[in-house]
Length: 308
Ligand SMILES: [Zn+2]
Image 1: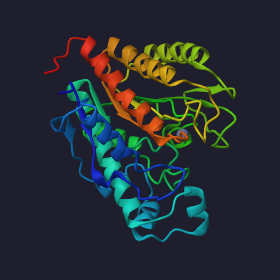
Image 2: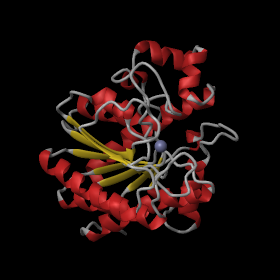
Image 3: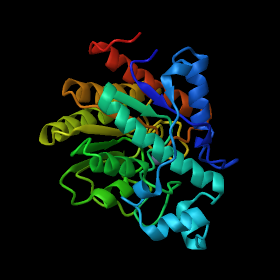
Image 4: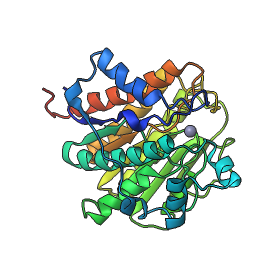
């Protein structure tokens, strides 16, 4: 058994068919964890869909209504970059329920991982870049409303800047946002996070890890959060079709361990979401996300937590 819970639902698949976004990856991650004996059935929790009341803590009533009814304009669909379907809407409501549950379980167990979510481009009144709703923002607002947390940090290592996150939490002194991403890539413009690390094209492991560690230490010491939400994109990988950085699979594992180690050392619970990943071979994307779970297992194990 893992020393923390994984959160998964078969309905996470957005059913996008041959789209560049392999939304079947959520199922493939779950299958790989079970097949390779890295997790057992008892390690998984099944989330309920987020309640609309929680969605409205972040999103406008109009946007929630448009998504639920399917009344999106051509412009809104072009910005979203995925087709509307009932399955897609159900999937993102489930992913958001999963991220709420991941936040709650992380506070209990030290770590938790939702196998979907990290939809960091979604804004209060529109979706974009494959992200219809911002599951992590909704989860944080719900945890705050429950008085489970006051302050949270979002560490976003997806290759694309977390523009939705920055838009939602800009000016909020209780939420610290850190985004490390390729500068010369979507989205444009990039509204400011509390810390933005704009990387040049082709940045490789050592340069990436050095600057990430320096800025992460700075953030964690400046701001003592009750919870860290990790948006662990697989797309800084050098074989990614939508990314232009040059991280190796080993570099990505080191990235995950680095974030988890620093959080753990300071006693900050970590909730994990996968975000993007568009490797030429989908199995590489799946492997990178599985490795994130293994990194969390390693760090959780190192710190004396019992794994049965
Ligand atoms: Zn991305």
